Image (cartoon, rainbow, N blue to C red; front, side, top):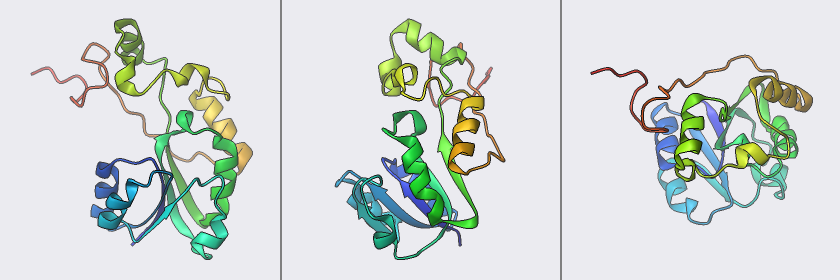
Length: 173
């Protein structure tokens, strides 16, 4: 069983999927409402801001096989200090699983032009203090912190379908 540190905010679907893969989950989330989800799926729940918590005290020396960010890196207030605090919590061969939106993708551009970007949270992708988070920029930032990018899984979406739908890409039924 893999020990996974999950940084909220998260969806119940994410926790369910990790639990289905027999992961032992520890959730850190600012939201008090996450407590209900944590009780169903997590071994432990820490309510608070991971940037302000004394992680060593709360985690009591536990090390994790992986850290999963529930929020996209562009929505985290201070991703670099946060990632620096997380790195020591990982086992030597531990990994970080993070999401980064691609604002240059056709589906995102069409959503902006169509006025439906609010369905995708907001447009902070364009105004992030770290700048536009391209793959190259994310790789540089992670290297600064001490992470090495070993695997990139890109989501592909047909830009001519409804932006950000759950439909599979290029489904031509």
